Length: 136
Image (tube, rainbow, N blue to C red; front, side):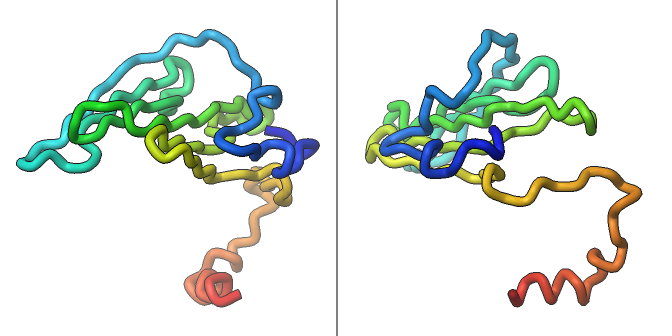
């Protein structure tokens, strides 16, 4: 995502604005997880797709106890060439039964992280400093 895109532009009713994403075919590896138990738990099965290059889970299909597709999770991947690092730009979960969605990890309107280890101030990572951050 870009710091030139405001949250109001990105977050539209029922889904992220598809005009702001960049889509390309990419190879993934599939995996599947199945919950056990009687009665079946609300989230009974998950199929996830791992990006072949970054090993990030790019998307996942979540099925309810009846075997119906319930939710879709999407985590578009960004290649931060200068770090180097491949990481999810954000994480969106769509509830197909209720029509709602939630997005985590938005960074567009936030101050960009400084990944340069030489600029990190160790005093910000003491237990007291972390405690102070939690009270603001």
